[in-house]
Image (cartoon, rainbow, N blue to C red; front, side):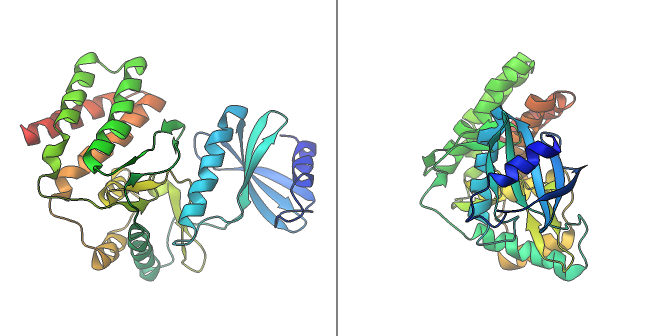
Length: 297
């Protein structure tokens, strides 16, 4: 977007919104993930964070705002998010936060663990959500379902396996994945998950800390799930400290058998990465599927 377009965007903000009446001074590109273009806007009333993409991303941005609003009462997130379309481009405008990927000490890491546990204490009548959203750029189907293994099989693993057919995942791997789906109840013979509000895409790149140590979460893919699905994701790509995990479990210890279910939950994200990026994620998914089948055979 040009300076003129962004100034026009700022001028269209409703007068009741905190960002109304601002004048653009300068802007520069910042890191914002691998899907959207991210920009820091310097205005006469402080900085703002802007994400831009094609008009097809409007639904993605809208779902992100809804997710942030669900998380906001329980943990710090970027506030006052505003989304829309201007000149055939979708945008998401939100509060600028000076975030570091490194904490300011053990207390900040402990606060992260405790606050994630507190978030997970927010329950619901069933698993799912009342609207679909996205995991990265991929659609994430949500319905309300009382049986967690059925929800995870039908609305997480199966769609990814179906999409993988078009991305070239070998037929033998897909068939093994469907066999795993059929056997999913075997992973829950001594475990009865309850619905927990989760961030949904909690890898190391989607959290950080303010200068005072306050933990911040962003880029959510929220729904009500087995909380172990969230904890598994924190282990998949790293970025979460042992101290944060200890603090989490001091509030709410994990159930027996989590170590076996961890790979089951992370298979969802590896399949999604294959569908988005291809490459070696297909081989990683195959190894995980074979290992999981061996554990319940």
